Image (cartoon, rainbow, N blue to C red; front, top):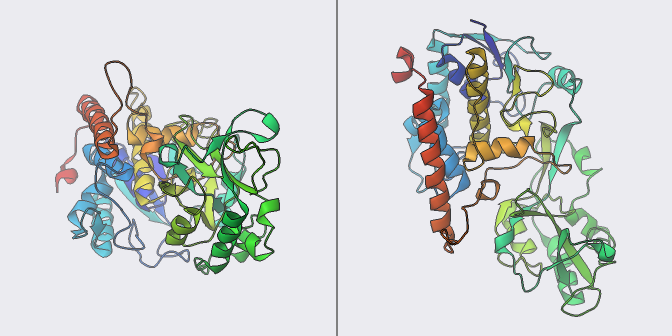
Length: 446
C-alpha cells in the first residue's frame, strides 16, 4: 500500500489525513508547528481556530449549515470534534477552541496509520500527496507551487468585491445592459446626482477594518478600495468604476449620473459581484452603505468585500472538481489556498481530497459529488473556468436549484426552498455513504 503525504495540519489537512487513514491508507502528516509559526498561529495544536464561533451557522437553511451536515454524514473528524467541543451559541456552531484543537490533535496523534512529522515542507512532495498549507503558506513552498505546470497565477493578496444574490435585487430599479449596446451581460444600478453624492459622503465617513501586522499595506497600491478613491476627490468614482458612459437607463431614456455595475459571478446566474468594489469597510458598514445603491436596498450579501494577505491558487484549469492537480495525478490541494473561503469550507475540501485520493490508491471509482450537494458545488466552483476567480464561501447560490416545471413549481418562501435543497442534498450524500461502505477502524469509535 502506497503511503500518502499530507502537508499542513490545519482543518483541511487534519480532515484529509483522517479520511485517508480511515480508508486504511498510511499517512505522513507534515506540520511545521511548533518549530515554525506564521503570525496567525498561537498554539501548537492542530486545526487552530481564531475565535469560538468560527464555524458559523448550523441551520440547514444556510449553505454552510448544509455543508456541515453533509460532512457529518461522511464521518468528518472536524465535525465530530466540533460537536464534542460545542458551547451554547443559538443557531450557530461555536466551540471551545482549545478542546476542539486538542481532540483533533489527539485523534490523529494516536491513529496507528498516521505518522506526524514536525518540519517545514519547502517543495511539493513526490508521490501521492495533499497540500493544505493555508493562506499563509511559507515562501519556499509557495515558490515551488508557483512553478507547477498548468498554474496560471498564485495570488498573494485577496482583493475580492462583494457578491449579492440576483433574487434579492430590486428589478424595478436595476436594468440589464452592456456599454454602447454591446449585449446585456451586466446589471446596472443607476444613480442620480443626489444619490451619488450622498453615497460618496457615506464612504468618506465609514469605518474601515484594521490592517493586521502580517497584512502588508502595499496590497492596496495596485487595487484601490472604493473608499480610498472617494477620498481622492468627489468625482473620482464617477470617472472610475461608477462611470455611466455608454449606458442608457430604459426608464428615463437618458444616461444616468453614475452607475454601479454588477457582473455575473456563477454559471447559473444566481450571484452577481459589484464591479470595482474592492473595499476595507467593516462588514456592517458594507451592508449599510452599499444598501444605499438603488436596487441594492434589500440585497442579500453572500460575500462581503475583503482585502488581506491570502495566498491562493487560480484553481480553474489547474484543479479538477476533486481538488486534484490536472497535470499531476495523485497530487491534491485543499483548504483556503484552493479558493474556498472559511474554516468549514476548508475542512470540507480536505474531506473531499482525502476521500478522492484514497479511492484512487485503492483502485475504486472516482468520488463524484454532484452540484446538488454543497460539497460537489464547492468542487465545481473551484474547477470551473472563471477569469475573475476569487475565494468564495459556500452559499445556496452555488448549489443547483430545485427543478421548476409543470410538476415542480417554484417554492416562493426562501427558507422552505433552502430546506428542500438541503433535504435533497442530504439524501444523496447518505445514499453515497451507504454504498461506499468505508469500514471504520477501532480508533474511529473512541
